[in-house]
Image (tube, rainbow, N blue to C red; front, side):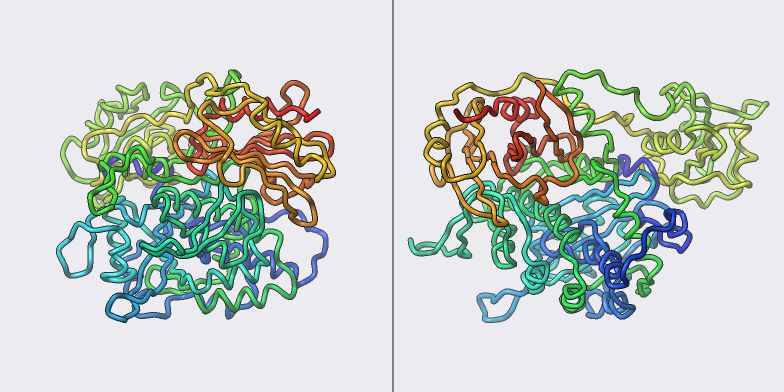
Length: 636
């Protein structure tokens, strides 16, 4: 399947600043002196996170421990060396896409070790919007697998790696999404446990009891024994959690992997020390390979620019995209299928994340008046359309469609549309006049309408064709004569909370444990209307980080689980970086979003912290989550 809809609103995918000037653009006033080891730890992490996201993708962090670290991360195996020949060359200053393949080798039925990929994930970093987004694919998703030199075959997406290695996965994903891919990151799961161990474990919120000991006979699955609640997982338990699947499906496993990415990021920011950095470097060197266009070695300036990008990533600019469960169909062989339109929709969300999604969602849930939309309106944008592909009528067609959308089309005094200096524009270009107020924002909006289009400052040879227009669009071969639907902000429709008031469901559970913790408990007087206390571990009292904590777990009518955590630990890693802080009814709440979905609502009261956490798939509506959190009342 190829993609003809809009890829992004700001140009072809490339990694954030790849040249030395990117460093100076981000330079701040001189900071207080730091020790050399502390600086090395800070710089190393972004590379580690960007290249070593083990089971799930990438996160933010630090960067460089020594020159050899970067050199050791280049492609070493014949597999990755061959695959990197098919990577797209990045364009400086634009967005970038990396393909992350997490793999291991398992004993097959013939006694041979068979390579398998458990994780196939795209990661996109966009310096123009300061956004980082991920797109995960279920390993059982049935697609056209493309092995070099063979005809495409219909198979699971993870079969691409088993059949023809990293190049097969790369070419399969490129054909599936229509996206250019600039970097290939392969991660051996052997290093997963080691890396988590070197970090001292990773703090995770486990949604319910996970247990299997293979004692009942029948098919065997990996053994696991995890209790619900916020806790620090070692490498083995973290791998058990992200790879667990036998009682649910790949959709849930992807959700667990993406949760791990966020937790991994939080741990990276707090775990580095002068003694831990060398040990982490050793694990990364042994288990990570990075394929680059042309096989060029990563240089320190490029990686340093990643570090700066990651550290300056604003709250709410980290996006996780996956195929919606309701859009997936299970086949008789237990593979998954979906309509190509759903792939296109996921790719669109991945390449055009709405950085205002969390704010828009809160406005809708609370009935607040939204802020005015960013960027100029079409009627305020003047555009000259230029033919850059040599196809008669292309510029006229593009200008007509833009005019129908309300844009001002500027023509020369004779009423004609000019031609570009050459007809070799493979992709459409949208050039903006840097002196024009909001010209770059306007260009991104127009580029999203043309699909595969790049955004750039206008060069002198093109400016003279524009007749004073804010934008000049050079129509390339990617233009098929139609514009994509106009981009719209992610504004969910407000709906009444799906809740029922019943404080007695949990009162008896909490009364039995109240004396075991040194802080006041809060009763969830409002529950999601299909929920009941979980049959396995409905209430749990345990100790984390030297503090007693209480976890309530509820099961919904759809078989998912949500919970309420209570602890006198006000700076737990999971609480970092809320999207919004607000007061409701005189109490302090903090909202944590994943896109437009409210992932967690935190209440701070009386020196303790109480948070309501959504299901793995975030199926509780924003209004329901807020109603549950507002319904927390002190146990009397």
